[in-house]
Amino acid sequence: MIIVEGPDNSGKTTLINYLVKELKLTKAPLKFEPTDEEHMEESIVTFYDDVIEYLKSHDTRKVIWDRLYFSELVYGPVVRGRIGLTFNQRGILSELIKQIKPLVIFCMTDLYTITKEYHKRNQYADKKQIKLIYDYYVDIILKDIDNYTPYSILYNYKGDKEEDVKTLLIAYDSIMRNKEENNDPL
Image: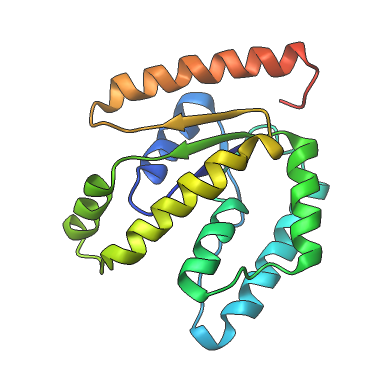
């Protein structure tokens, strides 16, 4: 299982589409679709109940996720002022991730590039919020990832997609060999 994480406009979707094609992966069938503010908390809880059920009942070896769990630990506090997962969901997801040992690819680039992408796509960009999200990923998630999975890659898209992805695929192959040697789920 692969989880691709990172701030908005950091290259996740482009990378996922490439990896689906290159590695013959399946995109996870569940994706959080935000609802109106009034029903947001309920939507988050329901979504993660569905994720937990999916992880427990499906073979996830060839599945790639466009964000899963870690993003809620970032976006929840920054955007809504709190994490939307229940305490029970956090515990279950944390344990499932530790058992599955997914490869987590963090798409991170510099703040300038992320902000530029917001403007290029005509998206609203609150620069303080973008910086806070970026800092949360760096200070909270990246520093703590080893507590969840021993397999993670920092992917810093620098503009040469072909060369950047070749480097990523070399790291991916190395990690998959390591997982196999350790008898960890592929």
